Amino acid sequence: MVVDTISKKQVYEWLADVPDPEIPVLSILDLGIVRDVTIDDSVTVTLAPTYSGCPATEAIESSVHSALRKHGVGEILIERVLSPPWTTDWISEEGREKLLRYGIAPPTRSQDIACPQCTSLKTELVSEFGSTACKASWRCTDCLEPFEYFKCL
Image 1 (cartoon, rainbow, N blue to C red):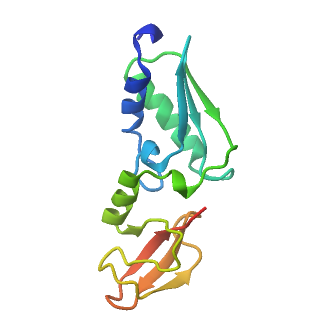
Image 2: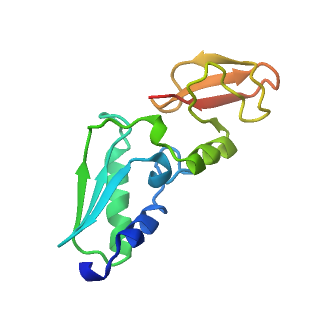
């Protein structure tokens, strides 16, 4: 596809279908790691990893390449930026709702973490370390269900 015929809006629509490899219910747009898209002689996607050592970063970059190639984009550049650092504030409202429906408590600045199963605030931290570095393990003392909480960063 000739780069001249591609719009920035189209690229964002294509990127909305690229899932986060660690939490596939979220797209990389939901997660807020796509910082910019520029189109000139190539399509450049600027990504801010959730943290500098995130093991999913290379997989995400590969998925971006694949998604754009699928739509005929030939020249693709990925620019990785660490400043400003990514924060959970960048997760979209839709992304927060998807996390909740998936059973992961979305990040909050509140000390009260609601159970994604029953919405009770009677919850307790089990471990600061969940299945990925971004999540902690919690459990609800009302419904007794374990759940993960997406930690604020």
